[in-house]
Length: 103
Image 1 (cartoon, rainbow, N blue to C red):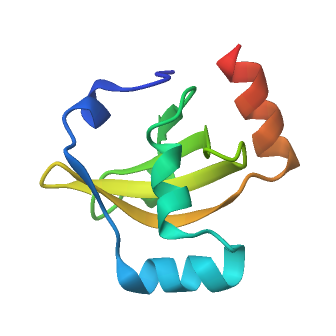
Image 2: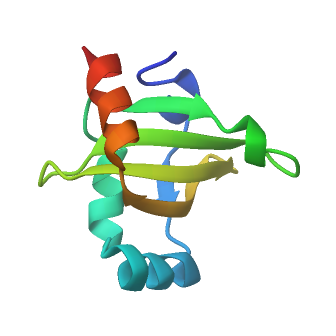
């Protein structure tokens, strides 16, 4: 289970999709800059999202923001750009996984 997979090291920028962030801001209170910070802070745990990877490869990232808010993000990579599909607070089970795995 990679804490920071090689695939992310090849990415150059995060691509913010306006419609996604508008929804995430309203529903989950996650701002664009806060969402981006998850990918730059450590530890970052990234898993394949096999369940949602029918049309394109998707990933799940467990990480924390600059304000130590723990979030989970579903994302894909297109042309070396990270495209966030959804981002929200981790639930209790996800937080336990994150804290147990990062140690």
